Image 1 (cartoon, one colour):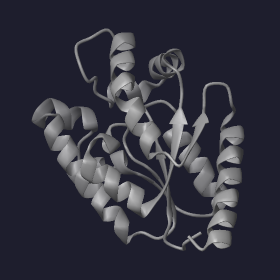
Image 2 (tube, rainbow, N blue to C red):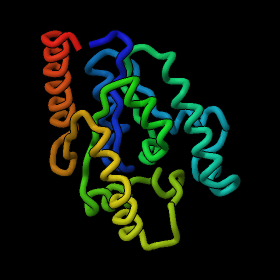
Image 3 (tube, one colour):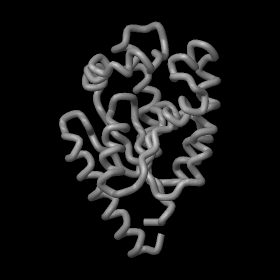
Image 4 (cartoon, rainbow, N blue to C red):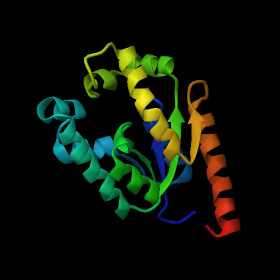
Length: 185
């Protein structure tokens, strides 16, 4: 694999991007970067605070800046926010910079994980005033085609353990590297 190639985990919130990303980075011996944390560090505010005080466009602008900064990094595992790829500029840059792995989970799993995750309530803002299940369903209906189009590989995280998800990603990466060597791509 190109020494500067990045492994980029995309998907809706609570599909496992951070947990899997940390484990994958540890297994591969490379850094893990969460773009939401980059944005929070740069602004000194949580995403919830940013969106409540300045709105979603402000957060998306800061997210775009964080994603642009990733080009300077070497090989790493990156977890952008779930909506980052909805911005065409972000999507193009991420696709150029690395291999996109889509972590998939169904609505029920996402809802259960969100309700069990204290960070979801305290730091992650809602997108609408809708009931949470309906918000997840509607957001997934818009994002799923984008995730699907961008992904080089996908893993369903509903029933697999974290280690099983990481194993599948590692197998894909090994096969990808073989194909690249074989075909010189």
